[in-house]
Structure formats: C-alpha cells, structure tokens
Image 1 (cartoon, helix red, strand yellow):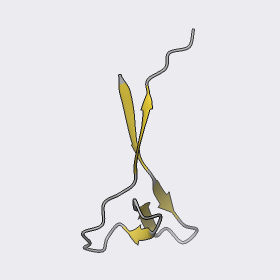
Image 2: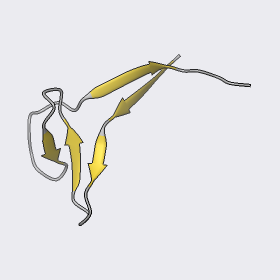
Image 3: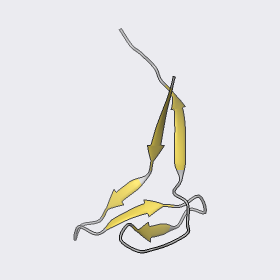
Length: 47
C-alpha cells in the first residue's frame, strides 16, 4: 500500500502555497497549469 503526499505550505501571514515538480512555490488561490510535487511512500506499520 502507498501513501501519497502533496507538499503544501502556509506562511506566517496565512498565505497557502504548494510546491511544484520544478521546486517552485505557487499560491493555492491562483489559477495555474503547474502540477504539484507528489511524494509517494510505502505504507509502514510499526508494532
């Protein structure tokens, strides 16, 4: 099973950004054709 993450940031004044695949910050409320950086990791269970 995989867990998928999107890198999402909030700055000190409350503006929200996502990180693109080209390592740029894009505001969430702006229309763009940029794709967010998606990070996938194998699901791990610890006992």
